[in-house]
Length: 108
Image 1 (tube, one colour):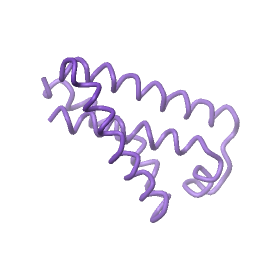
Image 2 (cartoon, helix red, strand yellow):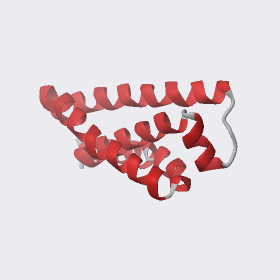
Image 3 (cartoon, helix red, strand yellow):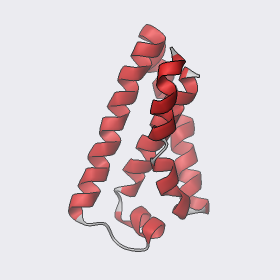
Image 4 (cartoon, one colour):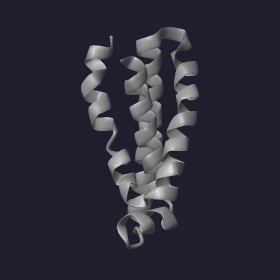
């Protein structure tokens, strides 16, 4: 259960980091992001990565950060596949933090 939470956190953060780029945002929403929105998406993605690192250490102990970084690979691959196949689904992946945070208390 904790691995699923960590995966959803990393998936959401990589989706946010992808949406902060002009081309990906335009293909997902049909318009260009403002500079303020792009910066907000970037900082939200980085903050979510940090929250995931803290959660990984809390849930898994010392090896949690290693597990979390290993989960970055499938999460980033999922975002790349979403960008290639259907970029309109990328905002859905960006809100993956919602079920992850809902499941977090049960992961302990």
